[in-house]
Picture 1 (cartoon, one colour):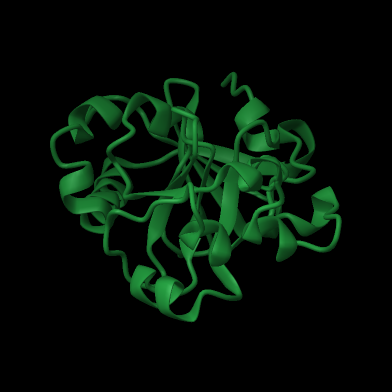
Picture 2 (cartoon, helix red, strand yellow; picture 1 turned 180 degrees about the horizontal axis):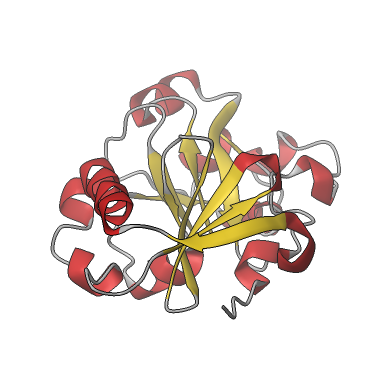
Length: 202
């Protein structure tokens, strides 16, 4: 049965249109990397703590051990990767918010508020498409938390246990329910994209 979400997606998307990771190649797209000074590491850690508050306070020392070196990898398109122990933990664009990678979220799934799309949306999420409001309000979808606009959220799906994507709300969950059209969540990173497949060896 076709879901409301799929009816909002009449076109086919190419990799280039689906955000920075569509064609990401760590050998070609990373322009440089450096181990940051302790003061910079503390500043990054503080910003992540401020951004995610109770979602990360109890696990921050496990996620970002104070004495472990932090590597900042700079990529084309002004994308930064935060790397510790050869694992990409977070990424951001310019000085924007830090997004946790899906591999980190699979270890600590309660770091972000979770929104659930309906079953019909799964193939679109797995292709990196942005999530339309009807995919978050139809039967099978769930929004059990109240989230403002411009919040970083994890995306799960009906019948699936794993987090499939991470993105930013384009409007509050209240407005998603009320307006019920247009983009609800802008996808930043999704399962099996090139960031997911990236292996760091520094």
